[in-house]
Image: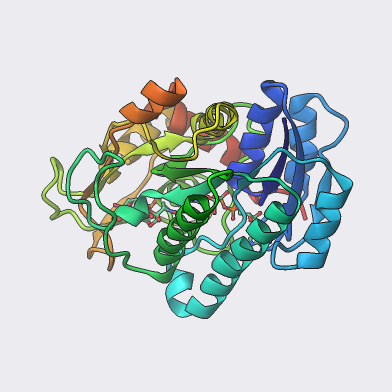
Length: 339
Ligand code: NAD
Ligand code: WQD
């Protein structure tokens, strides 16, 4: 299939491109580069053994530019990664988050239907479960109250896409709820390099390891978890990427509307991640215990059985691979991609 990948220059998009090419698909990327560097696409081409990734520097809110891409390519489906994703920033700039993530998706979906492309895989998030009603979290678990505008954009867009599919059953919509993506391609050539101070645990750990930050702050050690620190379902980004290819194959079998958790089903605490990083990479990670971070929950991990049963997908990388590949990327690219 020929796939439109919005946000394909970003962290998860770039890894997914490699899996798409590996599976024999082709891709066209649109990205406005607001949180990425086109060097990622050059490296994807190198890793995939192709000349170049077809790329348009296009903002998905720009209807005319998107129309042009659709008129130049016959596209079978869209994997829709484009969006703003910083939780804290979304609290400061809610309008920008709703306008970019929701406004952009509404334009994208309209252009898709006008061009008869009605297959979409959407990057959702475990954040839509809020403080989950049950652990491990199945897809039947009710959606919850999000604690920030970013989370609401995901929750609302799930509803938007669900309603569109109900109104027009010729749409195929797959909502993928990612748990906590970490790691990088084992080559160390592509990975994640957040702007400014990292919000997420793993990039913070790798920046401490590489000497950019003096120590990690562990946000709370008084949660009702085995060691008191927050427990999450970390998933290697290459596993996440292959989950999209599995979903694409299912879309081909025409699934209408489907929701899948993409996680490992295994919860690790903050200190589990710190200690695994130190053990595997032989690099010390100094840390101090800080107060809890507003909006955090104690425990969040998936039951990923539905994706295995229906997509034949399951995570293959373990915690040692995650911390090894995160470090391999960071130490080989201490400042991210060159500007
Ligand atoms: P990322 O920021 O690395 O990638 C997103 C890409 O979208 C960037 O390259 C950015 O330049 C682009 N983009 C943003 N707005 C755009 C617009 N209006 N038009 C065109 N391009 C635009 O983020 P990521 O970690 O790769 O996440 C990909 C998707 O997965 C996002 O939708 C994110 O919300 C979702 N997600 C991420 C995580 C995570 O922890 N990384 C977890 C759950 C869900
Ligand atoms: C993980 C654990 C922190 C940083 C977020 C978004 C979610 C999704 C994934 C996009 C928690 C602790 C963290 C630090 C710490 N993104 N921590 N010190 O909060 O589970 O999920 O990213 O959809 O929507 O909310 O991930 O990596 O920020 O935190 O102690 O410097 O690490 O308290 O227990 P989170 P995270």
